[in-house]
Image 1 (cartoon, helix red, strand yellow):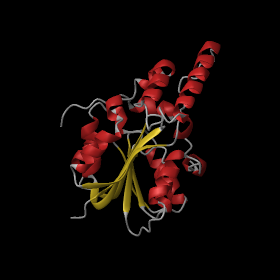
Image 2: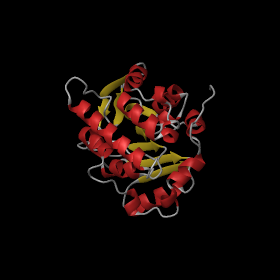
Image 3: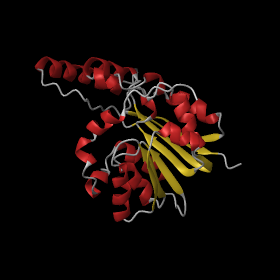
Image 4: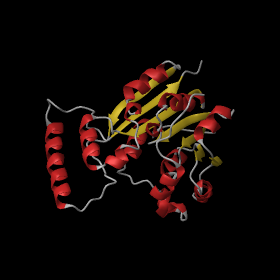
Amino acid sequence: MSTVKNLVDSSYWENYWASNLDDITHNNLKVEYDDAIYLWLKSFLGKQEIKGQTCIEIGCFPGRYLTFFGSLNYQLNGIDFIKNVFQISEELKKMGYDVGEFWQEEFLSFASSTQNKFDLVSSFGFIEHFTNWEEVLNLHMKLVKKGGYLIIEAPNFGGWPHRIIRYLFDQKNFQKHYIPAISYKKWRAAVLKQNFKIIFCGGFGGFHYGLENKSKNLFFKQTLKLLDYILRKLNASKYFASDSFDSYYGLIAKRDEA
């Protein structure tokens, strides 16, 4: 295995999810019904009839999207290196879902050594934190059973409108994301080599963004407001509209059963 650089460590995520760490409850796990990722998943997977199948979410804390897969009757599994990950499994059990195993472990070492395979393997906002994202994606695919699904999502920091906003107004957060990894075209090419059929591959969610930098500086806020106005006008124009504006890039693919 080649050297992998993770642009964020467990301490970052523990600080990011600080309000959730010690109080995983039904409300923490609830997905809002207008959530763009939830709506995307539902549009492609919401009518499945699942019986006796397994799924895993990689980088699963705090576990919100596992509740969607639980509603489809998948057995729920998860892995994360953040502390208290096991609280998610306990709360999911209380909510009545079929719960399998949860691991507090580095994904790459886990995926390289495990013999487990799953009917659905997913990650949300995960692979773009690795400079060696190709290897991370290949290890996702390694875990998918024949006939199983692979789901990858990443926030679109790679499209030029989002790059401008993040670079100017959200620099620290921007640097935690490896931009070459945020390319659904590269994801498509990688999974096609491994006998997957593409169900969806592209942008979704419309032009929205949230900034980690919450500056109260008036110049900051007014400049961002002006840039936001310009970009939204361009997005509405037939000459500029493209999936570069979409908030998320996603891939849903199914492994060949042969």
